[in-house]
Length: 528
Image (cartoon, rainbow, N blue to C red; front, side, top):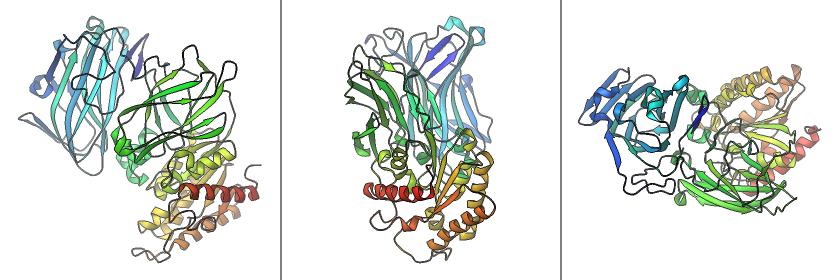
């Protein structure tokens, strides 16, 4: 990651969880005669600051931590700190016993002269299966310029409660990397914090010279108490459905390089492409079994000198790749992307809106609707989500200065989990009320739950899907009676059927639904 510290930059390569055991990847060039120095951190307990948790035990190279709150394990390399232009690797095995997944980070911190802060980190996930976490990066800071010695840390910060087994914790470095910077995944890549690289459809974007990270939700939403309210998984929430990478160039060819964390790989990686607002189809398609943790693809733009083309690369709906390289043909550069001043459309919901059943983001109904009406889409739906989760999502909508249209299509998982129609009604009303606090005049379209095979009452609740649909109609009617002139009802069950899919839409089914919904919204005058 890139962190600006005073007038200096410190660079590390954010590369997902990859074991660079021999450091033989294309990322780094080094002298084969140089040897790696490796230290087992747990063999030097005098250099470790143990976490202040309920229980910590070190025995036979295994650290066992029983935690009830966020915790850190800090190691001080002291005289073994790597010199400038060394490749540092931090690695460890970790296993967690506890509910759900714990999210943490491996990091290195120090202070340079002038109290400038050095902070580099790499996120990871801890679960019930032991896994190896490895992070490699280039350390460029001369030791004599450190005001405070460096510290290497393992930090569990989200859903940290549980019992952890940590072993094979190594800090190693390889000296004399050729040159002063790493060789990027894509040689000749443009720096990715270039202002002419735009990312749309995602509220929280972090741009660094070496990579671009996206999140649809605030980081606080992944805390344990938030996840319980959200009622959906971190894996689904961190996907990039609705996101688009937008550039403007005269280059006839564009090459993109990506990194991918295994936890967020999804079932497939399908990227779509629009050139000057026209769809061209899929430009990259891979199934999960064929995925690698870094990959590159190119596409022709049709641009020529004097005739630039706006390229919109559509991110996958069920993965979270991060861009690590963008290359144009020699002699070309990125041009400013024209401001479009689009109206903003935000979609709330579950897997039906997220895109389960469709092959890619650009096949989802929300995306198709946004393109038909020249809207900027923020797809905030999450597969597996319930109404309680969408209520918490509504609480962060104050981060958007303006929303022109919000659609809500949720209820399939509330019915499926045995929630009562009364519970659904109360939480749905709270969600509308929460939205109105920050967006009092935004048009809200409430779509009653769509078609699903089976009409029998739920075994647990005894409720039917039609009872949930009726609650949506009741809520909209009551809101209108209370003076809300910008809330609308769409009977989702009337726009869907076996032809759109048994529950989740097929590619064709999503297109059918988007077309039918368009007709309904036109009748209501939504886009006037």
